[in-house]
Image (cartoon, rainbow over all chains, first blue to last red; front, side):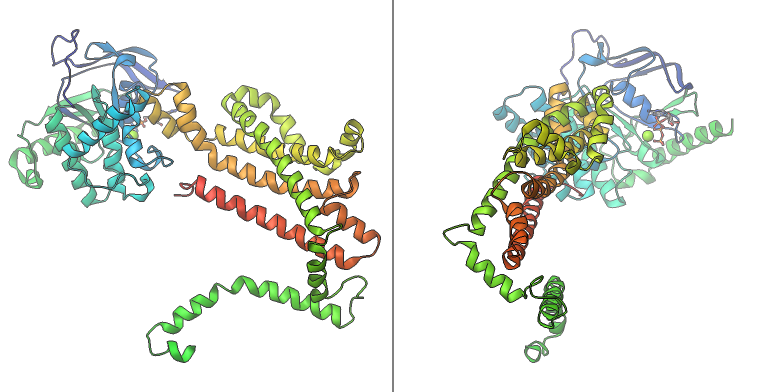
Length: 263
Length: 268
Ligand SMILES: Nc1ncnc2c1ncn2[C@@H]1O[C@H](COP(=O)(O)OP(=O)(O)OP(=O)(O)O)[C@@H](O)[C@H]1O
Ligand SMILES: [Mg+2]
């Protein structure tokens, strides 16, 4: 059910997301000036960069949450307002709806899209079965642990089969154990659906671990310093972090990042 | 009791914790003792302050007597308070939400609301009398007006200060303006709306009592209290005051209970 239906206007999967001539300033402070980016379909892409360089702003622009000053962004050849976005916010506590059950939270995107209740229920159940979720989701979100809430937020973001899934620092509010758990679930989601996924991370290890490629951003005005690819086969496991290829890519990223910070 | 509990480790502690639940009673007992003491010792003349037993037995006798019962006045005051509150809530909540949703609209009436909210409603009683005459209407309209101000202010404030994060989340999921309003904004402001409602019902009761005291009506707890004071039937007066207090307390508790059940997520 998470399969991506290719849109007829889409010619290749290599330029699935296109950002062209993007400009964005806040209160006269230039953040992005004529920024270009092309991202392929079906990959996990990590965005890594220094604090305040505009990582969140970039995915907010790409998901249409905030308007751009100038430029053009298309997903699958469609303008933003016609694409379906899944977005997992940094703070799950402040974005789940505590007044309805976790189940209703997960079904909410289907509801606003006008999917009838029966069909809604069927699709949610299918999703839960698929990812082997055994929580009692009739409870309210605040009755779950932090990691479980983040998982609910992820399920809510993918239930409506989005074109792209954005996650803003999905691990930053989680402890180590929960980070491992959510990382695992994200990988499962991705291997099942090949959903194009963009993850902002401030932790290099997290950034590299799941990614097919890592975008390294500079200080502002923000440029793309380099796009590093990491081609290790999935599923990646806790042993991945000692894999020579992982170590090599991670230190390569670190090197580029250090170099950039010295400028 | 303590001997029974002592063999069990911690039994005494549990017992003490149980006792802690009775702590609120201490204040009541102290007050009643002071009252009893000052009445019986002759510090305060019995004409001004009858002893508690006498007051409470008076309460029993007047509570349900066939004529001029305290219960009838209680019901009158309760009905007026609820009417005033209902009017205030039915107008105040929707208008407040509307004002809160259109920030420029709110800014244009902000001063008025703040001004009247800061003006003691009792100061407006003469004005209402001018308009409504000395009629029973005053005992509902004045409290409704005062409660309305608290409710409209808090509702507007709740909507305006709703956190953006969930609104953004709904937006990115494809919710339209109406979805956002009914699924997010309304709920997000509900805790603050409830603060308004709770303040509103308290203000309504205060103003009903005041209005009953000074504006031509011949029923209600406020009327009874002032009437009994005039004819120096102090036992009846104190009994009526007690019942008024109980009414206020019960309304408050009822609202807290409703609030806790409705806004179950608040503070979590
Ligand atoms: N709404 C806004 N108004 C004004 N300035 C903003 C706004 N949003 C972001 N900025 C500024 O833009 C810059 C980039 O912010 P952004 O949140 O995108 O950074 P980030 O890379 O996600 O940082 P972090 O690692 O701290 O999450 C920051 O300097 C921030 O102060
Ligand atoms: Mg950020």
